[in-house]
Length: 81
Image (cartoon, rainbow, N blue to C red; front, side, top):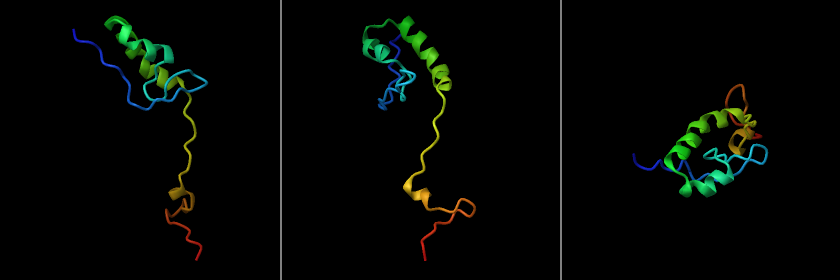
């Protein structure tokens, strides 16, 4: 069996509430120790990642500037005549 690769997706930001990285859903300890883990432990962590993501409550999406001036009913922009 070959080594189980890191689930890192280069979106490294630790959520303060959950303690999980918002990119790969690992803890900082799991990220730091990944190279030292055997495949059984890596597999255990990887198998938990999907559930971790679902357990963290989704945050409301921020409106970007492009959508901010748009009429939500028609999808048109208010250009202010």
